[in-house]
Image (cartoon, rainbow, N blue to C red; front, side):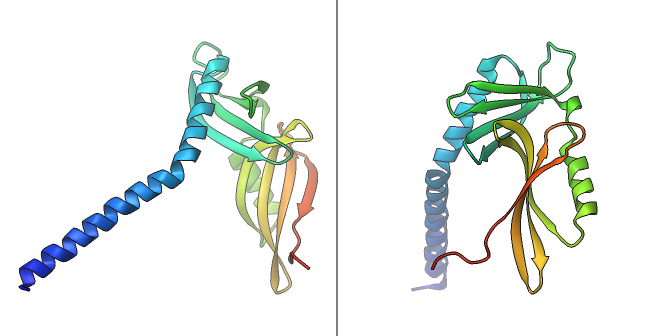
Amino acid sequence: MTPKRWLLAVLACLIALGVWFGFYFRDVQMPKWSEESSMREAVMATGEMDVIDKLYKHVWEATTWVARGSAEAESESELYVFLNEESALLHRIAADQVLPEEQLRIRWLNEHAGSTIIRVSPGLFREQPVWEVYYKEPEGDKERFKYQFYSFDQQATLIETYTLPTKTGP
């Protein structure tokens, strides 16, 4: 084969591989996208929000969806809406009554030097709105993974800390 045909064959293989990867990625992500889309519609159906800025899925005792956004008709600039899996409204909280995520991160990092935040998200803990901080903390030559739950208000007081085991199995 000539170099031109080899180049065309390689390009055709790369294009076919790219198309296959696109279909595969879409197929893997479709359930997540569908679930998020239906929850966005459920949040809008509550009539609490006109614009959704961020949608969080929180799984602890039960699966909860938290939407942060705004209602144009109200004086509140931003609010949080908590829904359960059945799309029932659980809580509605104005954002100005809650310590912002960025401030919680800064405060937390100042209190936990050397630790690394993996995720901060709103959720439900013991059926009450909370901030969940999932992080890793050095412990000797190992790292421990931990969850901390903070109250969902301006004080953001610590409610509970859970440490995950370093080993699993027998």
